[in-house]
Length: 357
Image (tube, rainbow, N blue to C red; front, side, top):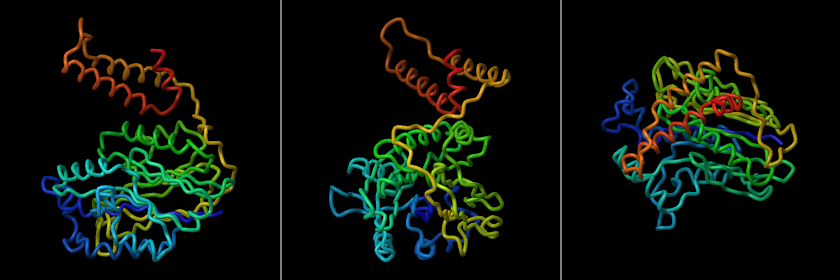
């Protein structure tokens, strides 16, 4: 079985031209190239021409629903396109309260109460090939489909965007992969905008280096929001039971040199297309991918001990009696820092070393 997969961050119109956020004005871009009425048909053309049977979209701006049960729904233009291409639209499985909280957050940050999020489009032939399941996770929506001998679990993700929160991205990625392993045995894929390169100098890259059984597709630059500085932020992670037949990033020389969006590229991200083939056996659902074990060098052990000691030096003093509200807040903050530190370590060997300190 082969799978044609497209991942694309659409650059939601909600996040363009936000007062107080200079980066959202894209000073290198001509104003007409930021207009949603002009960008949307170009996006539709790219989705249509991809001929993908699995499409993972990030930064989709939802439309208001008809009632309290569905306060926000995927936009009509996307539903119409999915019908034309015989694809099923899968929205994030959020509660009405979660949708309203997301819209409220966007109102505070972007000045408009609208919801943005993930949408996955799945070919009807996959939907009908076996039990079809939609699973919610933090920063992700997962779909599981296909016959028992070739079940697929696809996670469409959009990880934390703050440049200084690499440990949070690792925590999110770990949680998404753990969620994908539950339930029926399947081949697993994690696809989307990770908001970071996955090179050894990043927390995500170091964490991936400590995992075995999964492979990151080499794609090259996928994001061109700044002229002359394209970066690799969109990724496809697949298990070794799947092999890559074809991989393509539609990022042109103009995109790289002049930045995005532009006259021909309607988003600040390029579409990523990958064709995969099932070549191995389905891994049991309760079988975690093995960690790459390694012995720490003396230099690594010293550096790790120094970093852990520096973190412990920030611990708040333990009160003699019941802590105050301020003291409780300080203890929670320190606990979160320790969890983030451990989540960002590249391997189980590093975590074991910290436990011995």
